[in-house]
Length: 280
Image 1: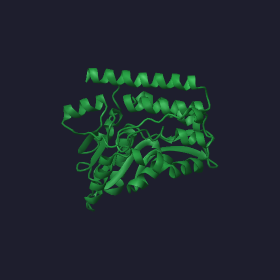
Image 2: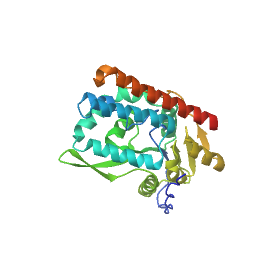
Image 3: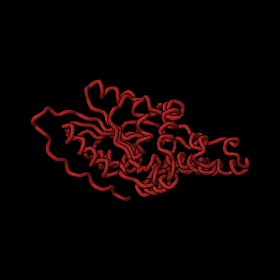
Image 4: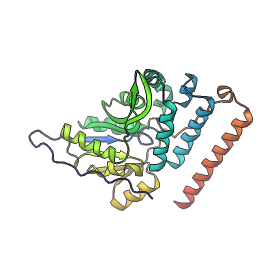
């Protein structure tokens, strides 16, 4: 098991002003029951940005991610594949697709428990920050829906309104923890009193950066650490994750191909669930 990079050591707070408490939330499988990166495959296909085959690949990747999660290496591979795919896309078009389809694609997958927890922190006067490896254009509409004003996301380079395919900032692992420290310095957060929520072992540095870490729907590696360290573990179940594959008409390819891909996907999901339950 690859250990994430250790969290940077926190710096001293500005004692001349009162400290504040923050609550840092991962996004995928913590706030929403899906991957925000994969969520818009159908919409990107309908807009002509990707091919039917690429839409199917995104749907399969979504299903695999929901069952098995992503290791650090898999996250890097996904980043490289997706940045190559979007090279030359219009930034405003992507932003518009995310905003216009937000309520049909993402809103139904927001965990009710996460929404209530965010509202609880806000009622307590805590600053809530969504910190995600997904890109800014996809995260900000979700944050707006939840009434969250601060986000930290992966930033993609663009020139003349088009994505270049390069990543300016990759919000993963130790980079998340460093962002938390930077925010704490800028806003005088008392990290010893602050909270962080995530489902993934790759976010261990982020969780270690605060005094109140919580594992939400944790993967096996994170659950093991949370149990060893006595961290709180939450299970969000409403809504249950849903997998939506593009229909045969939408992808315009043979029904045999679609059936074969669907069968492989279903079989893989069943086998991974069986293996997980058998070793739990």
